[in-house]
Amino acid sequence: MGLPAGFGRYHFLMNPTTRFLLGLVLLGLLPAAYAQTPDRPTSPDRLIQYTFANDAFFRTDYYFTQGMSLNVVLPVFARSPVNKILLPGPAGAVNRYGIKISYDGFTPLRIQDDTIRRGDRPYASYIYASLYRIATDEARHQRLTSGLDLGFIGPAAGAKGFQTYVHRLIDAPTPRGWDFQVRNDLVLGYTVGYDKQLLAAGRAAELIGSAQASVGTLNTFGEAGLLLRVGKMDPYFRNLGTQTGPTRTVGQKLQLYASGQVQGRVVGYNATMQGGLLNRSSPYTLSARQIARTVGQATTSLVAAYGGVSLRTSAVWITPEFKGSRRHAWVQFGLTAAF
Image (cartoon, rainbow, N blue to C red; front, side):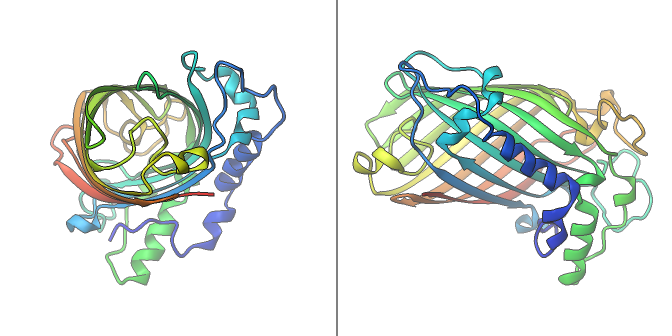
């Protein structure tokens, strides 16, 4: 089973990569000119979110096989010097600042093989932190997000030890190919996203258009998509999915809704398949001509929220990412809480 490697392994919290990412959190608290201005105030929202994704729910154990993230939004992150290179958003927008730590692991079709599977996906994992700003203009139903990504891809992420340990714990097949994984390299990137409401039917339904672009050593791509939300819910641009601070008095305390999202991506570079840009010593990677340059993804979600707590369950489908590969699917669970 492709359970998240972080479960059941204490040393994951103390390895050099994790300590480095914790250092980025401290960087987000370093004194700097406070980012709040009269025309772009900082939201008082305080949120923490955890997500866990795994493909075992579809009885598979390959490609994207495990992932988790920890996301924290705090007004104090407005003091980070990183914000000097993030986009401020339009006048009238409310700024929210956060740090998100992401860990994902990828394997080929068969993890029992102890040799390189030529033509298959390489073993790869990464862990990195995103320091970001979200500028939301609720009146104009639009949102601009920008972020700096910094971390590692390769053995430093610790995936070999974690997946091996967990598989041993649950008596699942031992992954034998992690010695051939993509080698250590820097994750450094810059991502920009834009959301805009296209249609709305009161508070019962709304259609959101989105666009995103990323340039970096891990991923370089351009993406566009549509998000449909239906049910009993707060407007999309009122908050970040759960009530916090002043929104607790104006929003719906109980929210129950479903959403469907489709996205199309044009891929420029993907280090989990092509290897890092700086370290070219990986024992096995896919060539540029083997990468699928267009990838489609669809996500359906069910969300239940009460006050400052939100639960989300999602199923994700993705088209083949390289020549000769299969379509893939996984499930993700998310918990968000205001404090």
